Length: 495
Image (cartoon, rainbow, N blue to C red; front, side):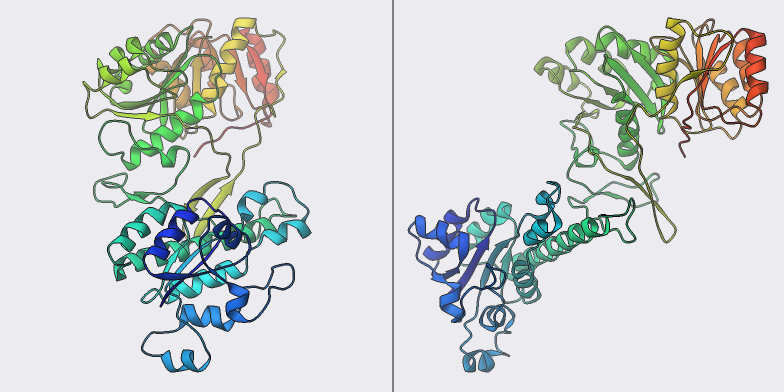
Protein backbone atom coordinates (compact mmCIF):
# COMPACT_ATOMS: atom_id res chain seq x y z
CA UNK A 1 0.00 0.00 0.00
CA UNK A 2 1.20 3.56 -0.75
CA UNK A 3 1.90 5.74 2.29
CA UNK A 4 2.03 9.45 2.93
CA UNK A 5 3.43 11.13 6.02
CA UNK A 6 1.87 14.49 6.92
CA UNK A 7 3.49 16.74 9.53
CA UNK A 8 2.94 20.46 9.06
CA UNK A 9 3.11 23.62 11.14
CA UNK A 10 1.06 25.58 8.61
CA UNK A 11 -2.21 23.66 8.38
CA UNK A 12 -3.50 25.62 5.38
CA UNK A 13 -4.99 23.23 2.82
CA UNK A 14 -3.77 20.08 4.58
CA UNK A 15 -7.24 18.60 5.13
CA UNK A 16 -8.15 18.85 1.44
CA UNK A 17 -4.82 17.33 0.43
CA UNK A 18 -5.22 14.51 2.96
CA UNK A 19 -8.64 13.68 1.55
CA UNK A 20 -7.25 13.48 -1.98
CA UNK A 21 -4.38 11.28 -0.83
CA UNK A 22 -6.84 8.95 0.86
CA UNK A 23 -9.01 8.84 -2.26
CA UNK A 24 -5.90 8.03 -4.30
CA UNK A 25 -5.26 4.95 -2.15
CA UNK A 26 -2.66 6.27 0.28
CA UNK A 27 -2.66 5.35 3.94
CA UNK A 28 -1.71 8.30 6.13
CA UNK A 29 0.82 8.71 8.93
CA UNK A 30 0.67 11.78 11.12
CA UNK A 31 1.14 13.07 14.65
CA UNK A 32 0.79 16.05 16.95
CA UNK A 33 -1.12 19.08 15.73
CA UNK A 34 -1.48 17.75 12.20
CA UNK A 35 -3.01 14.54 13.48
CA UNK A 36 -5.45 16.52 15.59
CA UNK A 37 -6.61 18.48 12.54
CA UNK A 38 -7.03 15.30 10.52
CA UNK A 39 -8.98 13.66 13.34
CA UNK A 40 -11.31 16.64 13.64
CA UNK A 41 -11.96 16.38 9.90
CA UNK A 42 -12.80 12.68 10.23
CA UNK A 43 -9.80 11.54 8.20
CA UNK A 44 -8.36 8.15 9.09
CA UNK A 45 -4.62 8.05 9.87
CA UNK A 46 -2.05 6.17 11.92
CA UNK A 47 -0.18 7.93 14.69
CA UNK A 48 3.57 8.02 14.04
CA UNK A 49 4.25 6.77 17.56
CA UNK A 50 1.92 3.82 16.99
CA UNK A 51 3.65 3.01 13.70
CA UNK A 52 7.18 3.24 15.10
CA UNK A 53 6.36 1.68 18.46
CA UNK A 54 8.20 4.57 20.08
CA UNK A 55 6.31 7.26 22.00
CA UNK A 56 7.07 10.94 21.53
CA UNK A 57 9.54 12.19 24.12
CA UNK A 58 11.23 15.33 25.39
CA UNK A 59 8.11 17.48 24.87
CA UNK A 60 7.89 16.44 21.23
CA UNK A 61 11.55 17.06 20.40
CA UNK A 62 11.85 13.41 19.38
CA UNK A 63 8.97 11.85 17.47
CA UNK A 64 9.90 11.23 13.81
CA UNK A 65 13.63 10.57 14.36
CA UNK A 66 13.21 6.83 13.99
CA UNK A 67 14.57 4.16 11.56
CA UNK A 68 11.05 3.19 10.49
CA UNK A 69 10.46 6.79 9.36
CA UNK A 70 13.83 7.55 7.81
CA UNK A 71 14.22 4.06 6.43
CA UNK A 72 10.82 4.43 4.77
CA UNK A 73 11.94 7.70 3.18
CA UNK A 74 15.51 6.74 2.27
CA UNK A 75 15.02 3.11 1.27
CA UNK A 76 15.90 2.55 -2.40
CA UNK A 77 13.19 0.58 -4.10
CA UNK A 78 14.65 -2.53 -5.69
CA UNK A 79 17.90 -2.19 -3.71
CA UNK A 80 16.99 -1.94 -0.03
CA UNK A 81 13.78 -3.97 -0.12
CA UNK A 82 15.21 -6.95 1.80
CA UNK A 83 16.60 -4.77 4.57
CA UNK A 84 13.32 -2.86 4.85
CA UNK A 85 11.33 -6.10 5.07
CA UNK A 86 13.71 -7.53 7.67
CA UNK A 87 13.38 -4.43 9.87
CA UNK A 88 9.63 -4.02 9.37
CA UNK A 89 10.08 -0.74 7.47
CA UNK A 90 7.28 0.22 5.12
CA UNK A 91 8.10 2.54 2.19
CA UNK A 92 6.80 6.11 2.46
CA UNK A 93 5.90 7.48 -0.95
CA UNK A 94 4.84 11.04 -0.16
CA UNK A 95 6.10 13.40 2.56
CA UNK A 96 4.24 16.61 3.31
CA UNK A 97 6.13 18.76 5.81
CA UNK A 98 6.52 22.43 6.60
CA UNK A 99 8.66 23.73 9.39
CA UNK A 100 8.40 25.48 12.73
CA UNK A 101 8.29 29.24 11.99
CA UNK A 102 11.77 30.15 13.18
CA UNK A 103 12.10 33.09 10.76
CA UNK A 104 8.91 34.72 12.03
CA UNK A 105 9.59 34.04 15.69
CA UNK A 106 13.17 35.33 15.53
CA UNK A 107 11.76 38.83 15.00
CA UNK A 108 9.65 38.62 18.17
CA UNK A 109 12.54 39.34 20.58
CA UNK A 110 12.05 36.09 22.45
CA UNK A 111 14.65 34.94 24.97
CA UNK A 112 17.07 32.58 23.28
CA UNK A 113 16.02 29.58 25.36
CA UNK A 114 12.44 30.09 24.09
CA UNK A 115 13.44 30.80 20.52
CA UNK A 116 15.46 27.60 20.16
CA UNK A 117 12.25 25.63 20.62
CA UNK A 118 11.23 26.95 17.19
CA UNK A 119 14.25 25.30 15.59
CA UNK A 120 12.77 22.32 13.78
CA UNK A 121 14.92 19.18 13.83
CA UNK A 122 12.72 16.31 12.71
CA UNK A 123 11.17 18.28 9.86
CA UNK A 124 14.41 19.19 8.04
CA UNK A 125 15.77 15.68 8.62
CA UNK A 126 12.73 14.12 6.97
CA UNK A 127 12.72 16.68 4.15
CA UNK A 128 16.35 16.03 3.30
CA UNK A 129 15.86 12.27 3.43
CA UNK A 130 12.86 12.37 1.11
CA UNK A 131 14.50 14.86 -1.26
CA UNK A 132 17.62 12.70 -1.49
CA UNK A 133 15.41 9.79 -2.50
CA UNK A 134 13.30 11.81 -4.96
CA UNK A 135 13.41 8.98 -7.49
CA UNK A 136 10.95 7.14 -5.25
CA UNK A 137 9.56 9.76 -2.86
CA UNK A 138 7.67 13.02 -3.45
CA UNK A 139 8.41 15.70 -0.84
CA UNK A 140 6.10 18.70 -0.48
CA UNK A 141 7.25 21.63 1.66
CA UNK A 142 5.11 24.50 0.37
CA UNK A 143 1.30 24.68 0.63
CA UNK A 144 1.30 26.54 -2.70
CA UNK A 145 2.31 23.23 -4.31
CA UNK A 146 -0.73 21.34 -3.02
CA UNK A 147 -2.69 22.23 -6.13
CA UNK A 148 -0.02 20.77 -8.39
CA UNK A 149 0.22 17.63 -6.24
CA UNK A 150 -3.55 17.25 -6.27
CA UNK A 151 -3.63 17.47 -10.05
CA UNK A 152 -0.87 14.86 -10.30
CA UNK A 153 -2.74 12.52 -7.94
CA UNK A 154 -5.78 12.76 -10.17
CA UNK A 155 -3.59 11.59 -13.07
CA UNK A 156 -2.11 8.62 -11.22
CA UNK A 157 0.66 10.18 -9.16
CA UNK A 158 3.71 12.41 -9.38
CA UNK A 159 6.13 11.63 -12.19
CA UNK A 160 9.93 11.74 -12.00
CA UNK A 161 10.22 15.31 -13.31
CA UNK A 162 7.66 16.57 -10.80
CA UNK A 163 9.42 14.81 -7.93
CA UNK A 164 12.73 16.40 -8.96
CA UNK A 165 11.15 19.86 -9.01
CA UNK A 166 9.79 19.28 -5.51
CA UNK A 167 13.17 17.99 -4.31
CA UNK A 168 14.88 21.18 -5.51
CA UNK A 169 12.39 23.26 -3.55
CA UNK A 170 12.88 21.03 -0.53
CA UNK A 171 16.65 21.45 -0.41
CA UNK A 172 16.29 25.21 -1.01
CA UNK A 173 13.87 25.38 1.91
CA UNK A 174 16.15 23.56 4.35
CA UNK A 175 19.12 25.65 3.15
CA UNK A 176 17.18 28.88 3.75
CA UNK A 177 15.93 27.65 7.10
CA UNK A 178 19.40 26.78 8.35
CA UNK A 179 20.70 30.09 7.01
CA UNK A 180 18.08 32.01 8.99
CA UNK A 181 19.05 30.19 12.18
CA UNK A 182 22.78 30.71 11.62
CA UNK A 183 22.33 34.39 10.77
CA UNK A 184 20.29 34.98 13.91
CA UNK A 185 22.74 33.22 16.21
CA UNK A 186 25.78 34.85 14.62
CA UNK A 187 24.12 38.23 14.90
CA UNK A 188 23.24 38.03 18.61
CA UNK A 189 26.25 40.02 19.77
CA UNK A 190 27.75 41.30 16.53
CA UNK A 191 26.87 44.24 14.30
CA UNK A 192 28.06 42.24 11.33
CA UNK A 193 28.40 38.47 11.81
CA UNK A 194 31.52 36.51 10.93
CA UNK A 195 29.42 34.41 8.54
CA UNK A 196 26.36 35.55 6.61
CA UNK A 197 24.06 33.43 4.47
CA UNK A 198 21.40 34.80 2.14
CA UNK A 199 18.91 33.12 -0.12
CA UNK A 200 16.81 34.71 -2.85
CA UNK A 201 14.08 32.95 -4.78
CA UNK A 202 11.81 33.87 -7.66
CA UNK A 203 14.74 33.86 -10.09
CA UNK A 204 13.91 35.17 -13.57
CA UNK A 205 16.27 35.30 -16.53
CA UNK A 206 16.56 38.73 -18.12
CA UNK A 207 17.11 39.41 -21.80
CA UNK A 208 20.69 40.42 -21.06
CA UNK A 209 22.78 42.31 -18.53
CA UNK A 210 24.00 45.88 -18.67
CA UNK A 211 24.97 45.16 -22.28
CA UNK A 212 23.70 42.64 -24.84
CA UNK A 213 26.78 40.41 -24.59
CA UNK A 214 26.22 39.88 -20.84
CA UNK A 215 23.80 37.35 -19.36
CA UNK A 216 21.69 38.31 -16.36
CA UNK A 217 18.89 37.33 -14.00
CA UNK A 218 16.97 38.92 -11.14
CA UNK A 219 16.13 37.22 -7.84
CA UNK A 220 13.72 38.26 -5.11
CA UNK A 221 10.09 38.04 -4.11
CA UNK A 222 9.63 41.41 -2.39
CA UNK A 223 10.50 45.06 -2.91
CA UNK A 224 11.75 46.24 -6.28
CA UNK A 225 13.22 42.82 -7.06
CA UNK A 226 9.81 41.20 -6.83
CA UNK A 227 8.01 43.64 -9.10
CA UNK A 228 6.54 42.60 -12.43
CA UNK A 229 5.14 45.16 -14.89
CA UNK A 230 1.40 45.70 -15.12
CA UNK A 231 2.07 46.36 -18.79
CA UNK A 232 5.01 46.77 -21.12
CA UNK A 233 8.07 44.86 -22.21
CA UNK A 234 10.04 42.53 -20.00
CA UNK A 235 12.11 44.37 -17.43
CA UNK A 236 15.81 44.69 -18.17
CA UNK A 237 18.84 44.57 -15.87
CA UNK A 238 19.31 48.33 -16.26
CA UNK A 239 15.60 48.97 -15.65
CA UNK A 240 15.85 47.32 -12.24
CA UNK A 241 18.96 49.33 -11.33
CA UNK A 242 17.38 52.61 -12.41
CA UNK A 243 14.09 51.89 -10.64
CA UNK A 244 15.95 51.07 -7.44
CA UNK A 245 17.79 54.39 -7.67
CA UNK A 246 14.64 56.38 -8.47
CA UNK A 247 12.56 54.77 -5.73
CA UNK A 248 15.27 55.26 -3.13
CA UNK A 249 15.15 58.99 -3.80
CA UNK A 250 11.40 59.50 -4.20
CA UNK A 251 10.86 57.80 -0.83
CA UNK A 252 12.77 60.67 0.78
CA UNK A 253 9.81 63.00 0.27
CA UNK A 254 6.42 63.24 1.96
CA UNK A 255 5.02 65.94 -0.33
CA UNK A 256 4.12 65.15 -3.98
CA UNK A 257 7.44 64.34 -5.64
CA UNK A 258 8.70 63.13 -9.00
CA UNK A 259 12.12 61.70 -9.79
CA UNK A 260 13.48 61.01 -13.25
CA UNK A 261 16.55 58.78 -13.46
CA UNK A 262 18.88 58.08 -16.35
CA UNK A 263 21.79 55.67 -16.06
CA UNK A 264 21.36 55.38 -12.29
CA UNK A 265 21.54 59.15 -11.67
CA UNK A 266 18.68 61.61 -11.20
CA UNK A 267 18.35 64.03 -14.10
CA UNK A 268 15.31 65.82 -12.70
CA UNK A 269 13.73 65.99 -9.25
CA UNK A 270 10.82 68.17 -8.25
CA UNK A 271 8.19 68.76 -5.60
CA UNK A 272 4.77 70.16 -6.39
CA UNK A 273 1.33 70.94 -5.05
CA UNK A 274 0.13 68.10 -7.29
CA UNK A 275 1.92 65.07 -8.66
CA UNK A 276 1.33 66.35 -12.19
CA UNK A 277 3.08 69.63 -11.38
CA UNK A 278 5.95 67.76 -9.75
CA UNK A 279 6.45 65.57 -12.83
CA UNK A 280 6.28 68.44 -15.32
CA UNK A 281 8.79 70.45 -13.33
CA UNK A 282 11.11 67.47 -12.99
CA UNK A 283 10.99 66.85 -16.74
CA UNK A 284 11.78 70.51 -17.45
CA UNK A 285 15.01 70.29 -15.45
CA UNK A 286 16.70 68.31 -18.24
CA UNK A 287 14.21 67.25 -20.93
CA UNK A 288 16.89 65.78 -23.19
CA UNK A 289 18.16 63.43 -20.50
CA UNK A 290 14.62 62.69 -19.31
CA UNK A 291 13.81 61.21 -22.73
CA UNK A 292 13.97 57.43 -22.32
CA UNK A 293 14.33 57.72 -18.57
CA UNK A 294 12.76 55.99 -15.58
CA UNK A 295 10.12 57.93 -13.63
CA UNK A 296 9.17 57.42 -9.99
CA UNK A 297 6.35 59.33 -8.30
CA UNK A 298 5.02 58.99 -4.78
CA UNK A 299 1.31 59.55 -5.45
CA UNK A 300 -1.37 57.95 -7.58
CA UNK A 301 -1.14 58.49 -11.33
CA UNK A 302 -4.33 59.95 -12.74
CA UNK A 303 -5.44 60.64 -16.29
CA UNK A 304 -3.71 64.03 -16.50
CA UNK A 305 -0.31 62.65 -15.57
CA UNK A 306 -0.82 59.58 -17.74
CA UNK A 307 -1.38 61.84 -20.76
CA UNK A 308 1.96 63.54 -20.09
CA UNK A 309 3.74 60.23 -19.63
CA UNK A 310 2.59 58.89 -23.00
CA UNK A 311 3.42 62.18 -24.74
CA UNK A 312 7.11 61.28 -24.72
CA UNK A 313 9.35 58.22 -24.49
CA UNK A 314 9.64 56.74 -20.99
CA UNK A 315 11.14 53.35 -20.23
CA UNK A 316 9.43 52.79 -16.87
CA UNK A 317 6.92 54.50 -14.62
CA UNK A 318 6.55 53.37 -11.02
CA UNK A 319 3.90 54.78 -8.69
CA UNK A 320 1.88 53.67 -5.64
CA UNK A 321 -1.27 53.23 -7.75
CA UNK A 322 -3.01 54.17 -10.99
CA UNK A 323 -6.59 55.11 -11.77
CA UNK A 324 -8.42 52.92 -14.27
CA UNK A 325 -8.49 55.82 -16.73
CA UNK A 326 -4.74 56.27 -16.38
CA UNK A 327 -4.16 52.57 -17.04
CA UNK A 328 -6.25 52.80 -20.21
CA UNK A 329 -4.36 55.87 -21.42
CA UNK A 330 -0.97 54.27 -20.81
CA UNK A 331 -1.82 51.29 -23.02
CA UNK A 332 -1.17 53.64 -25.95
CA UNK A 333 2.50 53.12 -25.14
CA UNK A 334 2.34 49.34 -25.08
CA UNK A 335 6.09 48.95 -24.48
CA UNK A 336 6.21 51.34 -21.51
CA UNK A 337 6.69 49.34 -18.35
CA UNK A 338 4.19 50.23 -15.62
CA UNK A 339 5.03 49.11 -12.09
CA UNK A 340 3.49 49.52 -8.64
CA UNK A 341 5.70 51.12 -5.99
CA UNK A 342 6.12 48.51 -3.22
CA UNK A 343 6.59 49.06 0.47
CA UNK A 344 10.27 49.52 1.37
CA UNK A 345 12.21 46.49 2.55
CA UNK A 346 14.59 47.18 5.42
CA UNK A 347 17.85 45.42 4.66
CA UNK A 348 21.58 45.93 4.53
CA UNK A 349 23.01 46.94 1.17
CA UNK A 350 25.13 44.21 -0.44
CA UNK A 351 27.44 44.47 -3.43
CA UNK A 352 29.58 41.78 -4.95
CA UNK A 353 33.32 42.17 -5.36
CA UNK A 354 35.93 39.70 -6.54
CA UNK A 355 35.75 36.79 -4.10
CA UNK A 356 33.01 38.09 -1.84
CA UNK A 357 30.59 40.85 -0.95
CA UNK A 358 30.56 44.22 0.74
CA UNK A 359 27.81 44.87 3.28
CA UNK A 360 26.71 48.36 4.25
CA UNK A 361 24.14 49.63 6.72
CA UNK A 362 22.75 53.17 6.58
CA UNK A 363 21.54 54.72 9.84
CA UNK A 364 18.00 56.13 9.93
CA UNK A 365 17.36 59.65 8.72
CA UNK A 366 17.94 62.43 11.19
CA UNK A 367 21.54 61.67 12.12
CA UNK A 368 22.85 64.81 10.47
CA UNK A 369 23.52 67.79 12.71
CA UNK A 370 23.24 70.93 10.63
CA UNK A 371 25.44 73.79 11.80
CA UNK A 372 25.62 77.25 10.29
CA UNK A 373 29.33 78.07 10.00
CA UNK A 374 29.19 81.44 8.22
CA UNK A 375 28.44 84.94 9.42
CA UNK A 376 25.22 84.99 7.42
CA UNK A 377 22.55 82.45 8.25
CA UNK A 378 20.56 80.99 5.37
CA UNK A 379 17.08 82.31 4.74
CA UNK A 380 14.03 80.09 5.09
CA UNK A 381 13.84 79.64 1.31
CA UNK A 382 17.54 78.80 1.12
CA UNK A 383 17.11 76.22 3.87
CA UNK A 384 14.19 74.66 2.03
CA UNK A 385 16.28 74.44 -1.13
CA UNK A 386 19.21 72.98 0.82
CA UNK A 387 17.03 70.16 2.13
CA UNK A 388 15.95 69.24 -1.38
CA UNK A 389 19.46 69.52 -2.79
CA UNK A 390 21.03 67.39 -0.06
CA UNK A 391 18.45 64.62 -0.44
CA UNK A 392 19.17 64.47 -4.16
CA UNK A 393 22.89 64.65 -3.48
CA UNK A 394 22.77 61.53 -1.32
CA UNK A 395 21.27 59.54 -4.22
CA UNK A 396 23.58 60.76 -6.98
CA UNK A 397 26.91 59.25 -8.01
CA UNK A 398 29.99 60.93 -6.54
CA UNK A 399 31.52 63.39 -6.93
CA UNK A 400 28.31 65.35 -7.18
CA UNK A 401 27.14 68.93 -6.92
CA UNK A 402 23.43 69.79 -6.92
CA UNK A 403 21.88 73.22 -7.51
CA UNK A 404 18.27 73.58 -6.40
CA UNK A 405 15.54 75.96 -5.37
CA UNK A 406 12.74 75.06 -3.02
CA UNK A 407 10.76 73.23 -5.69
CA UNK A 408 13.21 71.34 -7.87
CA UNK A 409 16.75 70.65 -8.90
CA UNK A 410 18.18 73.22 -11.26
CA UNK A 411 21.49 71.65 -12.21
CA UNK A 412 22.99 68.22 -11.50
CA UNK A 413 26.68 67.42 -11.83
CA UNK A 414 27.22 63.71 -11.21
CA UNK A 415 29.92 61.08 -11.21
CA UNK A 416 32.95 63.31 -11.68
CA UNK A 417 36.50 62.75 -10.50
CA UNK A 418 36.77 66.47 -9.72
CA UNK A 419 34.26 68.28 -7.55
CA UNK A 420 34.91 71.51 -9.42
CA UNK A 421 34.08 69.78 -12.69
CA UNK A 422 30.86 68.51 -11.13
CA UNK A 423 29.95 72.09 -10.19
CA UNK A 424 30.70 73.34 -13.72
CA UNK A 425 28.77 70.51 -15.39
CA UNK A 426 25.75 71.25 -13.21
CA UNK A 427 25.90 74.86 -14.38
CA UNK A 428 26.14 73.80 -18.03
CA UNK A 429 23.18 71.43 -17.61
CA UNK A 430 20.97 74.04 -15.93
CA UNK A 431 17.92 75.13 -17.93
CA UNK A 432 16.93 77.76 -15.40
CA UNK A 433 18.68 80.75 -13.83
CA UNK A 434 20.80 79.83 -10.82
CA UNK A 435 20.43 83.21 -9.14
CA UNK A 436 19.51 82.66 -5.50
CA UNK A 437 19.91 78.89 -5.71
CA UNK A 438 21.28 76.64 -3.00
CA UNK A 439 24.06 74.14 -3.62
CA UNK A 440 24.75 70.74 -2.03
CA UNK A 441 28.00 68.80 -2.11
CA UNK A 442 28.15 65.11 -1.22
CA UNK A 443 31.56 65.50 0.46
CA UNK A 444 33.59 68.30 2.01
CA UNK A 445 35.14 71.02 -0.13
CA UNK A 446 38.92 70.65 0.13
CA UNK A 447 39.41 74.10 -1.39
CA UNK A 448 37.26 77.16 -1.94
CA UNK A 449 37.23 76.75 -5.74
CA UNK A 450 33.91 74.85 -5.92
CA UNK A 451 32.27 77.46 -3.70
CA UNK A 452 33.61 80.26 -5.89
CA UNK A 453 32.32 78.58 -9.08
CA UNK A 454 28.87 78.14 -7.50
CA UNK A 455 28.74 81.72 -6.23
CA UNK A 456 29.76 83.07 -9.64
CA UNK A 457 26.82 81.17 -11.13
CA UNK A 458 24.43 82.89 -8.71
CA UNK A 459 24.20 80.46 -5.78
CA UNK A 460 23.73 82.15 -2.42
CA UNK A 461 23.85 79.19 -0.03
CA UNK A 462 25.84 75.96 0.17
CA UNK A 463 25.54 72.84 2.26
CA UNK A 464 28.34 70.29 2.71
CA UNK A 465 29.59 67.80 5.30
CA UNK A 466 32.63 69.79 6.38
CA UNK A 467 35.68 68.09 7.83
CA UNK A 468 38.46 69.33 5.56
CA UNK A 469 41.73 70.58 7.00
CA UNK A 470 40.97 73.76 5.00
CA UNK A 471 37.44 74.24 6.32
CA UNK A 472 38.30 77.67 7.69
CA UNK A 473 39.61 78.83 4.31
CA UNK A 474 36.33 77.77 2.70
CA UNK A 475 34.33 79.47 5.48
CA UNK A 476 36.34 82.67 5.01
CA UNK A 477 35.69 82.56 1.27
CA UNK A 478 31.97 82.08 1.88
CA UNK A 479 31.88 85.05 4.24
CA UNK A 480 33.70 87.18 1.69
CA UNK A 481 31.20 86.19 -1.01
CA UNK A 482 28.17 86.56 1.25
CA UNK A 483 27.27 82.88 0.85
CA UNK A 484 25.48 81.22 3.77
CA UNK A 485 26.99 77.81 4.50
CA UNK A 486 25.97 74.83 6.60
CA UNK A 487 28.01 71.82 7.69
CA UNK A 488 26.12 68.55 8.23
CA UNK A 489 28.88 66.25 9.51
CA UNK A 490 27.65 63.42 7.24
CA UNK A 491 29.26 62.51 3.91
CA UNK A 492 27.16 61.03 1.10
CA UNK A 493 29.58 59.29 -1.25
CA UNK A 494 27.80 56.97 -3.69
CA UNK A 495 29.96 54.74 -5.81
